[in-house]
Image (cartoon, rainbow, N blue to C red; front, top):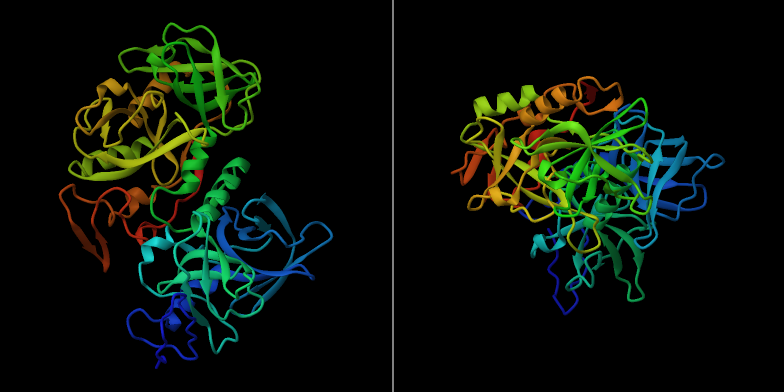
Amino acid sequence: MLKKVTLSIMLLFIALPAFGQAPGTASRDVYQNIESSFATLDDGTNQAFGMYIAGARSKKYVYFLSLSSLSVGLEVKLKVTGLDGKSSDTEAEKLSTDDNLGVSVYTVKLSTDNWTPITRHPDIGQTGNSSIWSAGSPRSQLVVQVTVNGAAETNSSYNVSGSLPAPHAGLPVFDKDGKVMGMVASQNEDGSYRVIAITPLLDFAAKAFAAEQLDLYPTWDEVYPSQYAIERVRASSAVLSTVNKPGTGFFIGRDNNDVGYILTANHVVEGEEIFSVEFAGYEETGILGEPMPDAADAGLDLAIVQVKEKCPPIKPVIFWSPKDFKQFKKNFADSTEAVANVGRAQSGNDYFQSKEGFIRGENMEGQFMQTDLQLESGDSGGPLLNKNGEVVGINLKTGLQESNLSVANNVETVLNFLDEKLKNVDFKVKWEFLQKPSYWSRNKNWIIPVTAVTLVSGGFIIERLVPNAIGDDFEKAVGTPPATQKR
């Protein structure tokens, strides 16, 4: 039984020598939920906890997120010790580092078989007055309770009080269900601990993975859409700085002469000759594009742009397969499906913006589909994507918006257009598809009737079905994306 504590201005630490089973308290289940997601990383001099966030599809590498203090490389092997006590000495390297956060993504040569990516809690503010926890030591005290000290000072960190074991560097902070909310960075002078919030941690990881164009499986569980999916599509997107209608496009392939091909909306490039094309990370390289001859359709509002010189080494998008799209139309005519948009950023630090919404499962006949995304000038020609990172459509004119719905060309229309216009191109690399039906079509639990308020299926409950309100157990119900293949 927990001893009562007195609340003061700063909430005090509560330690659990045994596991209570009352609602809101820690239990052995909490530890079991995180046990295969964390390890101590030791370079022989420094030690820190690391959280497993993703695996390579080859199953030969795992990716840990931890503090930047570890030394790795050809001469230094990393000792990885799981919370189950099993250790391995293995090769590792730093994939990427964020100096502001003081964290790195480490590529570690281990099989993915014994690891489970973390489940992310999106916001410390969403915990309310609920208890939060960290890993304990020794194993007789597997978890300890910590308390948040007031409001977060910044969006990237907050302080907690508690009696954490040594080493505390990199310790996870998680809720009673094992959903990770941050990583302990350091101890403050007053004895409290600074925690890096989970959102900037995973934002950094997603961008690091997308920059390296890694083929990941699986990745962390989270509320849709997958950050990695967004970042991967962003990495293939381009801003087209045309005179009258600047907009967005996305990279679909490169031929054997190293000419790049970008798909966009026709009204963005109609009447243009040569214009600037800017990919994220290549804004200053002077890339020029021009409409491909005889590769536009005003009725479909589609066009293809060619980059004949200086085409950067970016990866083409993955498309939603026509088979999966037809199945969706056939079986879910009165349902919705989650979707995100990547379009041209109008302001702020992000070069591309993303928005979340739903595909309407009705009015799917013909070339179009509807979404509840509110598009802006500059979004035209941008890709719509699902949680797998598959492109499901392309944004059309903002003037076609009806009420709260926007109109897009669906993937079936887009692929038929590409097959017709590019049938004689000898591609070195081009768009791909998933090898197997995506979990969008294999797992129907989460596909929600438009009028639903609560769905119960196999013990899984989704409440308040509005964009950005699907619970953190979302991806547990739908699984993780399989491999990709060429068409």
